Length: 333
Image (tube, rainbow, N blue to C red; front, side, top):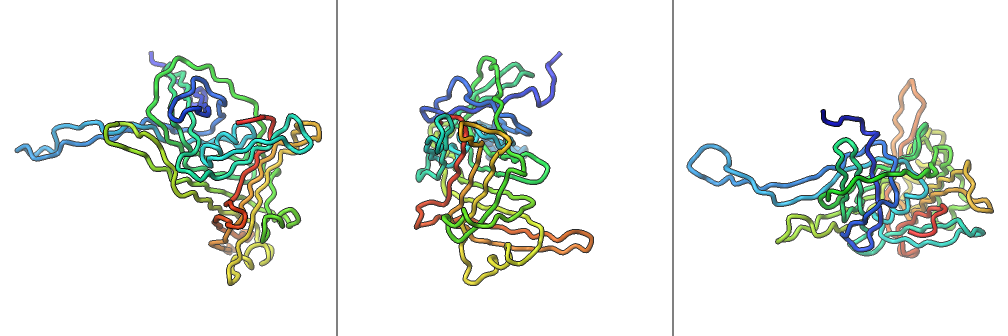
């Protein structure tokens, strides 16, 4: 009888590649995932010329192999910088102020078409056949924080065709997670003004990061030789209960439209690390954002909410679009 089972038996891991496109032999992090759909993809070309028959074709030939899919994981403190590095392309590790075993990892946009590649590992106990996927890249990330749920990431990935491996023995690290009550949202006219800005209570927020990956397909190869990122975009949507015009409506409708710096901060105050003590933290700073849409639907039986959309742009003065600083106990990535 063939092996059968549920998705909880599978495991998915990642590791940073030292040489682009050369798979690592073991995972640095095995990720706890809620949903995964990472599949082998292929493209065929059809022989559909006229052969004196009415049937539509006489054969197909393979012209491309790769892997692609999606992965949903909780926002955690230790594997997060590696996931972000793959998409953003730049990371600096420093010791957190006042600490010796707590570190800050500052992730920014790297100004190149090749951001950090990963090896993706898939442990499949049902078929007893595991795979590694070299040259894995994360090309789209959606960060969701909403009431009643852990903050989570929805990741879109691309990679080379899988290579069969001997069975892995996954071990998932007990990382720190982030609950909705850990989140603070602020905006101000400048980044320096965020510290003293008044926090605004939100119902939910979604941040979408898109690096617009393009497959580098070439003659002479059935697999892409690379996956290259192009325009880097950050957009978001937030929802808050309607209580006044000054929270979002005034600034959204202002003419001329004035860009705002934003801070999305998640601090796990239930966990202490280091001696200060410090806490596992994710601080997302967007240096310059424009509100692009404001709506306030009115329903007679419900409370009134407001929804605001925004788009981050590059700040010439600060020389950045934004940065993400993750504080944890990992020394380097």
